[in-house]
Image (cartoon, rainbow, N blue to C red):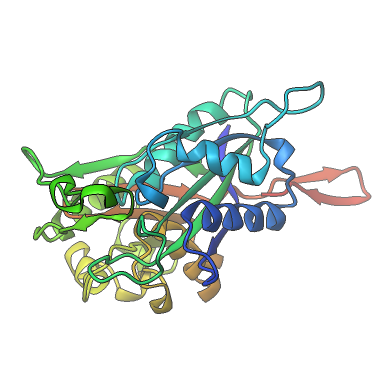
Length: 312
């Protein structure tokens, strides 16, 4: 059994500053594109980091689950569902894909819905010093008997303790802690961490520069920073065209960036020939890389009447 992508969507509607709402809208669009009902979803994982009012309890995933209408009632014929938060900075979505795959493989969960995105806790769309673009994203996964799917997650991280990059300075904000956030991104260049994770993933998957040069493989590298994609391609010895990031208009969507990069690559047509897609995410403290091989539809001969193919 392999974990495969059914659909993906993003949302950055300007009429709301709520991550809960932006993520829910992206999720609804994702389900509509897949033709899947909320009743069929058995798991929801939230990987968004910055959320409305700095809320920590209840889990953000539960609030988004309620907005979408997933598993709110237990009755015969309805799929039980559960949700949880899994936050790991810029790499959270890749960790969530691996986690969801463990549940999908058992057959107990038919569809797993992953959501990501960030917003300033004040729910204002533009706040000085907040570097991330407000928005939400969703990725729907299923288990398929076809060959392909996601491989093993490869990670790299800085040695020793990492300084915090975001926090609420309670001594300074007083009663405004719910709407405050201080951001101080680290000074470390994520290039080395990203390259280490990508090399490990390439070696494990058995692909090299020729696969990228000939369009059989592509890297989705949404890390922000001037020239990051070009520098990554040079470091890995790849053609610049084989490293795809987010669309320029998307800004820096942080935890939702892998979904943006996937949809951007899809829109450019580069995924049409790619048999291996490397999902790469990185920040100044850690990096993760996950290989994805889109399952190939299996053609089955039906006597002499013709052929049929499975959906993927």
